[in-house]
Length: 149
Image 1 (cartoon, rainbow, N blue to C red):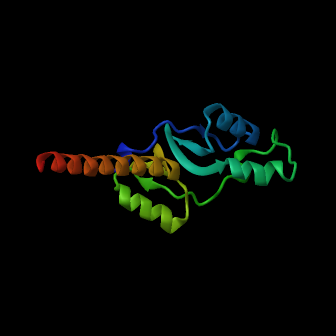
Image 2 (image 1 turned 90 degrees about the vertical axis):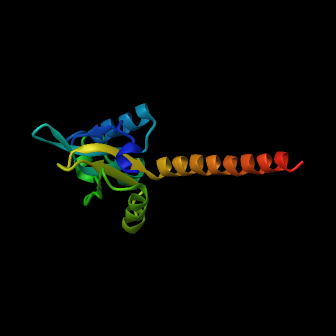
Image 3 (image 1 turned 60 degrees about the vertical axis):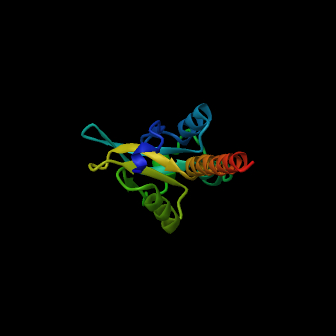
């Protein structure tokens, strides 16, 4: 299954020159732990960085910097790791593990933002799949017990 089918397509984005205060407000408003920083390239939103709630705490709040002046471009993680929308789930998980990232922006062939795949999303998906498998085993055991009476 390609990750384009399971990634979250409702990604909250900011521009490089948006303030860290704006990023924090968006995170609070949408109950999320990160925002993607995008550049607009001929109408295509291309992810170029990410800012997490931890970045805001460590880089802005702890040193008591002015969050109304510092932009997300000033603190965003550089070297953003992305994946193409057509790769499979297992390959995406391997990529996350190899790169040591918890969040993986998903892009199309032109580098345009399609969605984001997060560790939390994967854990929820895998837990649901394991639950479905355990129900199947229980159903089969019950079916066998009923047929052997």
